[in-house]
Length: 133
Image: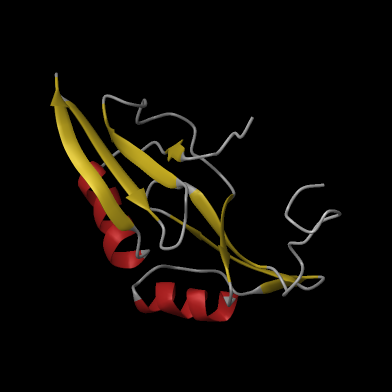
């Protein structure tokens, strides 16, 4: 049986600010922004090239819930991804090389934290060669 991670809910205290950050600064694509009723609002966005999306809104999560930490965006070139984000006004850490795997870190306006991760070519392979161990 396949189990695909498809959606990660993020707490936010300001939906419009988060929507602007993820679209205009982080470059995510807006999937939908709907208000199904009873004061609820659902905003779903997907990073370019990803099969997994994020969602936030009103009436979904407690805006004071613990922030999500350590979400990873796997990129081909961490320096290029870092430069793109910084060019859009996102504060991004310097690049750290952890034995060939490179990281840079940033957070959204609510403190949900992200890692840009660059894995060397062939580094994602595992025992059977197709991502399964």
